[in-house]
Length: 392
Image: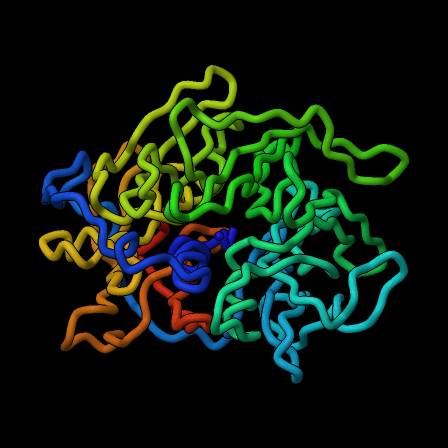
């Protein structure tokens, strides 16, 4: 399930497909509604200057200083590793390709990296050494890889940017009551004081289409130079069964996340949760349309997310095996909805078999990296806006 986050596009789509969801469950669909809180307006949030395939094929996240970045991509053996690079240089340094003291094994997959706002730590979901896959037919390493990118069978690690210091922060296990079996995130408040992630606590897809995931909040501290997540608590809004963190607004309290009150989570919406007051705001309010992977822009004024909104007239566009999604842009309050890509529309240069997955903004808000899913692999696109779109 962040990568995800995931995605349900990259995270939960794989979860449902692989664990053998029954045909009945896959075909359950409510009547589609074409209305939503955010609709196309005469004043688009931003104009697209250019959309092109990215030269770097991997999940790229920038350090707080903006010049250095971490990128998750396959090594020569097809194992996803974490590399460190700098803008203006083609050189990448792998910090996970060799065994480090106290670090994970090089042959374990590493998923998308998240920087702590201090720039001193990178938080990484890493494939566990031991986990149990469901007893279904057709398991292969390809599908296991897809589930790992969805967040299943992972543990949370913190690593210094030079790869020298490693600390494991969770001890998740398969089949142990009261213990999560994986996570997505974490995402941090811009001041670095709090972290939020989502962890799976119930994998019964006959009850919950993509399992039940809870939002966990913790305080971040360094004790004797060691990163620590303390005072952990469940902040899942009442009635929410599936939750996936996106990122925080610059105000240090507004968490953008994908969530669903329905057990059939394919109609998830984009929500903002105030972690200080628990106030919950539904930005998309389209319970039969697949809306996922929202990200606030650097200044918090815009949001990029993936959605089946352009195809909402087709009831199959928000079903697992026939999903059609593109990237959308909207203002922070859900207005000014604008379509950025046309992956599923013939006649456009980017038209293909893949679906929109998750976005990452550039530090200056003038562009974004868009991840397109071809299960379980990805294609990456750069979208460049007219001027500085998300950094006022």
